[in-house]
Image (spheres, helix red, strand yellow):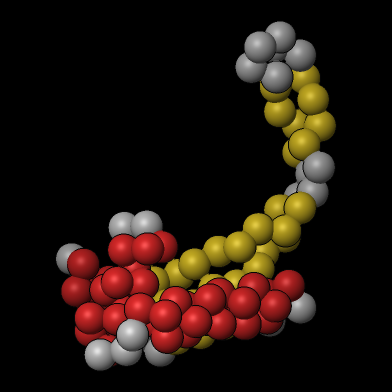
Length: 90
């Protein structure tokens, strides 16, 4: 499902216009992004939680040359599914 299909599904399930559903989805994405950028966790009870984790620097290999390289440390976004979501999927 892409963003346009998600907007359509939100509009159909919530009886919002497509325009309002797009605004709501964009607002959710913006607020979640800003919160994660600050290092905060975003938890939606039953659905899951988004968090930021630090990945340490590590050694890797260039697949084209086989030469060893150093991969820089960075922050990554993680999602952990909630119990309701996991139960529904399984």
